[in-house]
Length: 341
Ligand code: 1CP
Image 1 (cartoon, rainbow, N blue to C red):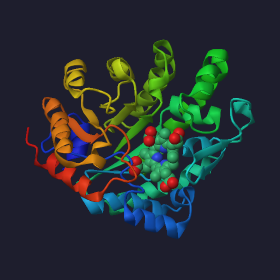
Image 2 (image 1 turned 90 degrees about the horizontal axis):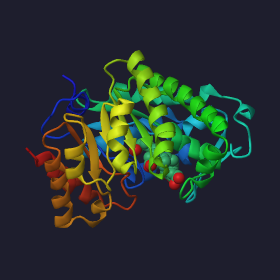
Image 3 (image 1 turned 120 degrees about the vertical axis):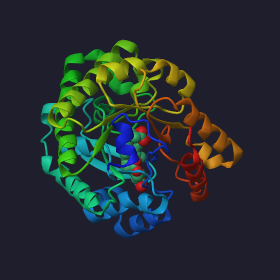
């Protein structure tokens, strides 16, 4: 029988609630820091399939989470589209050439850069217990485009939003190219063993409503439709961070199976407003895992109670903080595992 997480993503209201944490494989884990120190930089880890598979499995072994998310990054797609990619310690990703000043057609695609990621998926799948769900992922086109255009992260995605207004045809071509590669990439992950996939749209919140329709909803809808055709029955989780009041339109128009909610969303508002029966994922503030104590339990229960009437995957509203004490994760697990509705 499929595990709790996969059943929930398929629309079953399961108790206890399945849980996993965004960025669950990473620097808050001593076993991750040890392997990273041994192997070198982040990209070296991603491209060492055995190491990446081990890192994917570390949080499952330690905490027994219901989902294992592939250890990789959303920027592997632009890397395969021909941009150079580096992760600078303490500063984050740098990509070149930047599409703000170089045409998309100047890039030479290197699709082989996706192959080691599929190998990681195969290795994890071979080792993962059958009641755990293997999650693949990709960035959503808008979020990936913000890095491709600007060459690095930015506070308000200024360069990319400006380009989309200034030259919508050129920007549409970038989005269309990312959509095409992302469909192939997620499909490849599914063929290699991913049982569900998540689309991370971390910067969806920076767009005005008409731009949100065009650059967030439309490309995600295209990806979901293509995946549904190729892999019916494989759930897609959409996580449009910062989408706020645009969430119902996003859920209905993209056709995602499960909607990821960030911590700025009031769970009671979401429970009232989102389509009846739509599975949701989220949305505890990751900062509460630093604070711990009574407030952690109270807020986790508030999230759990709010979504009692629909399928719910417990998660954070965004990635777990690097300095999170492991005991606090244990405390959260006990609260979620103990909840019976
Ligand atoms: O120094 C290190 O150890 C590298 C830090 C790191 C890690 C652990 C980066 C660099 N990426 C990752 C892994 C990662 N990234 C995963 C692995 C699986 C897991 O969740 O455990 C996933 C799903 C991502 C997704 C990702 N990468 C997103 C979307 C989610 C989010 O956090 O908003 C984004 C925006 C990125 C880009 C990226 N990669 C890395 C950094 C530091 C960033 C952010 C850059 C910025 O601030 O703009």
